[in-house]
Length: 256
Image (cartoon, rainbow, N blue to C red; front, side):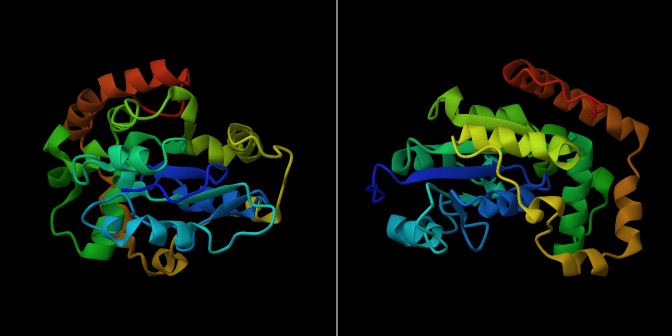
């Protein structure tokens, strides 16, 4: 596929993870005058079974919709880009069309992410299985695979240099928002001191879903028997150690 963006058109992609705060980060970045983020948020362009067939001209048009004279970076946020087993080939397609792109991966306590992921699936797709059944395949479970952050990241590293990748803890975006956004802005070499009222809010992809969420969903998602916790803990332990070693971050709030 032919590259159609000009050399000075810089791209940034929030590649995940699902239920890690990507909607909020997308909104915060879009508020910065030097960054234009796509509308809608999730373009899923680099997924063959979704929007890859639309071609790079479509992608460029979607990225540039809200551009201003100050825009230096164009970006999007598609958490499906870190579901490698479900949607293979994303990093290679991305590197082929925008090899100089910067990538941002949001990570979260893997157990909290899996509970939230399951609740999302239960609410939106009416999943019939319980949380135990959804998790017990271990490494074969899509819920677990999406929480193996270093494994997902390793698919990108052959195509992008480490300097092109930023990993952020969702907990830090929530609790230390100013400092975390300064990291993002420095990563993109834009004004790190910029602040907006938008940064005071937490953003959700569909606020109506929060109000519509049945109490039973939260009850189901909160129950994780000890034997299931131990099995999933063991499945994730090595991946989490590798993530800590590569990023130099401790992720102190995680139970793993």
